[in-house]
Length: 324
Length: 252
Image (cartoon, rainbow over all chains, first blue to last red; front, side):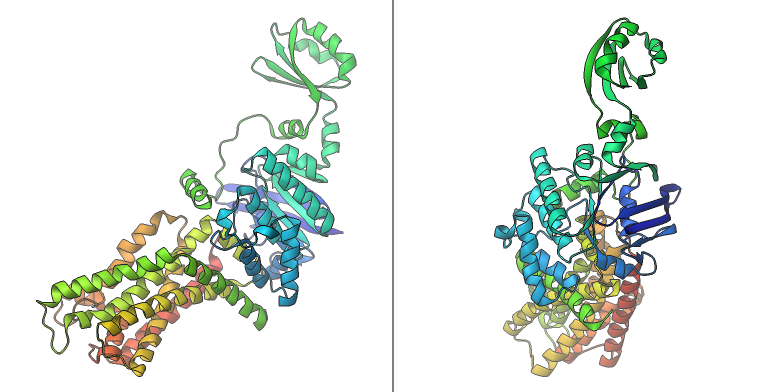
């Protein structure tokens, strides 16, 4: 059963088409990843699915409810963890969840147990009576994961859940996400531009660029579609054209004097290749990663910081200060 | 949308604002202290040279400072919603099933609670200043201040819902709150003003709140009490309507 379905979903901001005719199905119970460079339209798509933004055209159904015609039913069906901290840091962890329980009309009798359960799930029960401003960045994320789950949503949206966290904390947050998938019967839609995150957590990923879905599949299939392993060479005396005749070289990409190749059956073919090149220094040989898939589909050009509705550097700076 | 959901939504929003209010003591202290200093220093400094018929200057300006506390607290409270936007707390509320109109109303209740608590403290100061309070005058003053606070919190929320960033925060004080206060007749009688000032004070809703408060607390006023009350009430109703509309169209 598809828990989310979109039909030609489109959002236009002035002259910018942030999301362009996206047709998408997310199945119940999966972890679905939306990957894309900054400004690709991931967050805009999420905002439309959570009814915070009205689509310019097209429509979508979440848990069977139309996002235009039945937004409050959609909102009851979903949980949301935003990119930026959205808990009130003057309140305690417990109070933030109590507030959430009231907003979602959880029966009083059920709310208490449920708050305890989700707090235990993210190991914050002991810190429940501390003000959120005393929490670390990772603890805040965990609190927000707990909050997103509190009202038993059918779908949990996670917008860049580990953005700005250090590697240890990120690993930790992943473990919590894996744990809640196991213990709570919930579909997760996650946006990220950390490829290891998507590779580790997601059953399927859609790579989005310029508001369109470029490719959609499981991380494993996407990697095998690249057709081999990655070889990076530094060419001293370039005879790049000689590689053209090898059918096992699937892809050639040149950045300065470093060439990145996708090569089938590296162990067997590498010596022959090097001979043909007439002298090259091997920089790296490794299995393809989702990062390679990402770069393959979205290109290597550096993106200008996108004009997202989030505001400029000043506001980011203020926000960083406010969120401590 | 049933009544229980609405009630719980209102309570949730009020609960948050009240908790924040109780924990941000410095904000409370500063919003009381400023009007108090102004009132005592202006009253003391000008009281000796200003002669008003029937009433001392300190007493004359007292109702104006009750209105000032409400004006400052309420409008700033409302505008504060722009900070909620910045830290994304607002999104958490907007993505919940609670209707926008309920969110707006809950915010108004939260802000009005802050304003009423603060103005009560200033009322206490009034007792020490020897103002002729009686239960009826106090009750009438509270009613007037409550209606006034509803309008002013709503005004602040309207402004806040249109603001994109807190950069404009200082401007609100300089171009909205202070002019509204200074042009309200809080510090001077409305009679015999230069014509440009007379015009501005007459279109300022704060004028009627101050005049009404003076009427119920001191028994002197420039307009009939019913006119004062009607205008303040009409202003608040208009602001609620505008506020609900602006919350419905507010983007995050």
